[in-house]
Image (tube, rainbow, N blue to C red; front, side):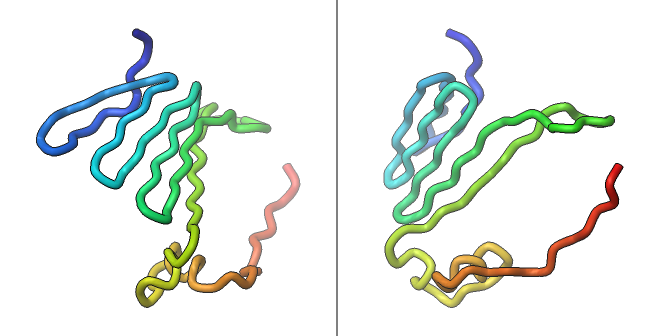
Length: 104
């Protein structure tokens, strides 16, 4: 019962689950908490959760936060490419240019 917010297909069979749900599909594991979902495949983990837009002025009042993390040799398995791949190509911290926004 309740909201079934994770929906998918594994080996030709559809599935759906919500709060505290779990599904394994080959090497992919999916877990749902109350307002978050974690997807794990080999040495990669994607964490997705909803949050409020703090200091809201207009437009949507909620947002989706997505974080990626790598373990072991995941970043070194192939030549890094793209924004995500280059971010994980080294264990050294990345300090890129930061945008300055005017105070409202």
